[in-house]
Image 1 (cartoon, rainbow, N blue to C red):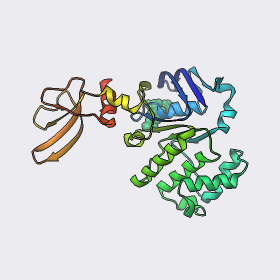
Image 2: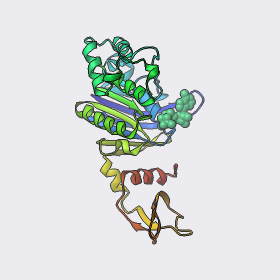
Image 3: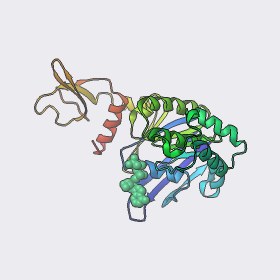
Image 4: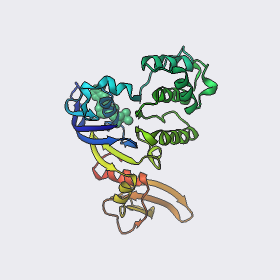
Length: 286
Ligand SMILES: Nc1ncnc2c1ncn2[C@@H]1O[C@H](COP(=O)(O)OP(=O)(O)OP(=O)(O)O)[C@@H](O)[C@H]1O
């Protein structure tokens, strides 16, 4: 599957411009991480990709066909977990997935549901009413409905919200195994979620793409811009601090800057440093 996004702009009716001149090509197989601070425009981009919103300007095509003319075909190949996802509290997990399978017109729904339940570790909860589930388990049901019918294109908007660290690791592994032959787009503001699983990152801030490429390329771009130093008055000026650790010799600060001050010792950037460097370079959020 190939998705082409051409000069996309999105302005909401209240005048808020959520996306500015977005152009991108996405192709399977790939696990793409869409990262950016709150309000960057990630959910808006995902809603445009599933034809849940119409762009103010620009176009999206799927395998060369404009999305406006192949919306139904796209939906039959799509699994989508939106950020706000309503579950039917009185249904059991199985009943809810059966209902979603019917909406998606999945033929062998029984085995499709069983596969989605197994992939999300919900076997023991399949007969439980949704209202009795924990936040993390509900999120798993949301992920399970997206996996129904093994779609070629999966879009997960903040899928790990509400999951505990162990569950997050489990889902990271699930996303990367799912992406072996598909296109998976994963939006998050948690860098750990995209680290080591995504082969491509798109960083977006204030409606604009700041970076698209491999995680190593983002890290490389921050080399020489990340440093550590011991805390003392005035030492933090001109740096965006990413962490502080108490050590025997004092508080060891880690920060990013366009030009490292002489008291900072350059260190190897992590993906999180590199992301922060990129975001703060544009004068964005700290
Ligand atoms: N329906 C809407 N009407 C007006 N403005 C909106 C609407 N939906 C989103 N926005 C605004 O558009 C911008 C982008 O929002 P969006 O939800 O796409 O960001 P996001 O990156 O997904 O952020 P978050 O992680 O906080 O959900 C924000 O400033 C938001 O307030």
